[in-house]
Image (cartoon, rainbow, N blue to C red; front, side, top):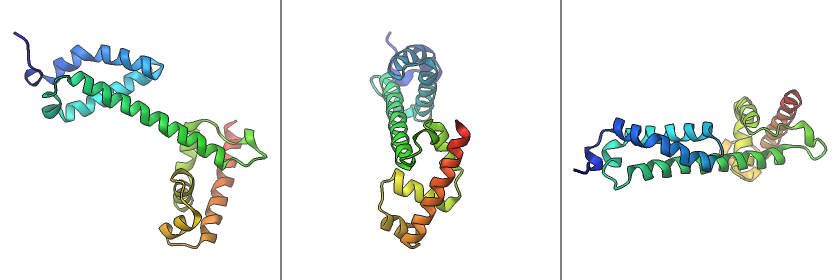
Length: 162
């Protein structure tokens, strides 16, 4: 007798499909460590929604799709951070700015809140100075000053990362 997906426990589903899911993701991600992280996140989502996921014809395909979406999101974020790193780096100091995406993310997260908000809105969200000023309830001059200070801080951090 063939077992229907909805009659299957999450534990048995996980046991039966995890290794092949990680193997498939490793091919897409380029390494087993990222594949394992992505798979674990996707299986956690499946576990939380098991009542719905187990009724699908191919719950394993759903898990792989969720994991692949997470991989695509990671690549998108990395691309955005790299693009931002180039925009924040002064033209005369190409080697002084951190090229490592994780270092950039940590450096931006450590900025004072107003500087961080200005950087995220202007560079990450690609918003104009006037839009950022309106969002933050400050003048454009204040936004320019916050961005200037943030770039200086990020350059100093970049010097320490080398």
